[in-house]
Length: 241
Image (cartoon, one colour):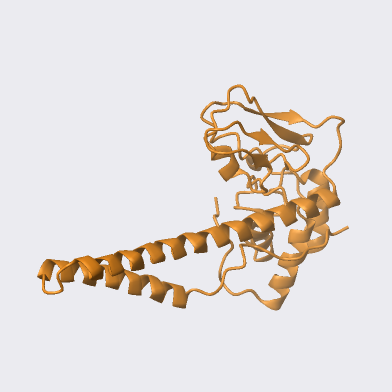
């Protein structure tokens, strides 16, 4: 699977095409296309690295939409990527759930709630049916259940899913920064502790302080070199009709 968006510069045409293709995808973020999400797949199509028939949730209608956007011939859904199927949602057997949180970590749209060692539950109205929560569950207590009454995934569903996906990306980026800040603060506190309690003439103590100081400076240098993060794939999209 391709894990991220290709960082090679895009031409103006490729960038515009990526936006229109991304807006035409269902935003379930299921990765069945072989890419880590809808936008990486859209960019792969725009740059000629993927075909338009790799999205099972979009099905034949989705392929037809991508065909119109790209002016490429419509193709049958590639069976290597899956089959077109009715919309489903994840359901957790709460009696078996051990609260491991692996499903929460896997959900691309934060549709699962719970806490460590506590029962989890899926918010059915938010679930995209991606089934990414199923493989990591060690208790095999998650099932994909057809939506009742049967309905199609809509453009409004796609917009809402994209908003939740982007919000999750921003949250994860923020938590990553906060973790780094905490570790840096702990390192600084450790250095201050060494300064306060160790003999300034002790060579071993000075060596320890030098190692901690060097680690702090490396962390600060990495922070200076990194641009501010806004979350992966965040953008504004309108569904292609």
